[in-house]
Image: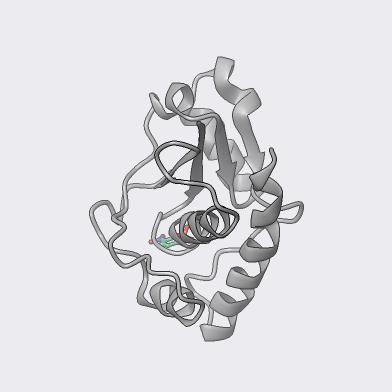
Length: 146
Ligand code: 4NP
């Protein structure tokens, strides 16, 4: 079973959206959560721990039939390095922050979710969230076979 952790800064905008999209993408291809794959998301910062995703992320996902409203933010933990096969960060700063929390021996599991950075939409507009969704959706396909 492939275990993937999506990571961003606050765990309320990008990484819960990425988690929802991956779940949707994998299930569309006939894979089953719990047997074929396991997904979660976390933030390197703890400001929003316990909160649901940002309403704008919930809305853009809803438009594509993906429900992320039940997700709750948590902070990245040291043990996530051992528990997951892939830790997918959203931008370069994110990658550095993940490397600070996760022990060195697991750093080969850390990658950018996409070739280019997924920029933080938190202070952006509705369009920023649509753009984020499109980028994450496109990039999600590659993680089917990796
Ligand atoms: P995210 O966006 O990392 O995509 O969840 C952010 C949400 C909140 C904050 C930063 C980024 N914040 O500083 O509160």
